[in-house]
Length: 418
Image (cartoon, rainbow, N blue to C red):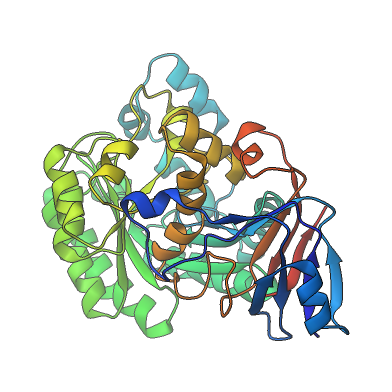
């Protein structure tokens, strides 16, 4: 049955080209007033037009009253690590005492702590934990969530994590995108000797990637390319193997130190390069000449207490499409609140509200290769929508930390009802 979304104070359409937005394009979210949205029975948008015009064209349609709220595209969270067991709250206190990220990892904390925990859990436990988290993510206006593996670091545990993501995608109305991140760290039992490290690299490239690709368990392969984790040469080797197996490419790039990972992302034509807080001028130049989306994760730098955020203004001015994502994970960004990420985009990265909204919708979709399907409220696109109890779109990042989302829909189907 056709549905009409009427009586919104504003509709943030983000309408435009079905691709990543660059430069001045990123500053135009195309906000319209006194219009509604018609959605067909298949969950695609038919029209965006004045309410009266939609009512006349679809007299038997089901009416959804937006009650003066703001209707937006559902947010696209293009970088999360949502499959994990216990929280790692003790690490926040360690950081406050001056212990750094890499030192925590050396002490067996960080990623390794989550690896030990995940390996001890059943698939049913992980599904139950992730289901609750994903429902809370949807309750803040997010309708598409990329989810990475990477807390398994063994063939069995990585495949099990990806199967959990596949089951969640079947069980929940959210749009989920799976990413293989077997190269999230070098397991502790492979770190003592160079030969052991090489053994793990071969495991990732010769066993994990073929198994993931053959089973169709992931769309992307990601690598944590960072000094002290995976080198540029190791990352290149892994991602070339992934591409040969049919997977698309992502990188954790230049998060804490510059390691020329952004240049590698451009060289390989990665769909996205994520983090980039330590990107160099040469890295910016490389991405400006590529089609890679720069996905920035301001919540991570905030939670880590790092003084330097990614240079969002320099990236946009260089013509690089910028996306925003939560980096939801148990150690460095435990937030499900995407409007809070918008707040940080404005207050910490100095984006305009329109730039932040494009970064969380159209460019987030482009960072997942989905800009032709989602991310904007325009005819032909999936009706992935979020309704907020505000009267102006500029209130979305303004009421920081507050949950103003009333309802979300994926393909016209209700996901969250506040």
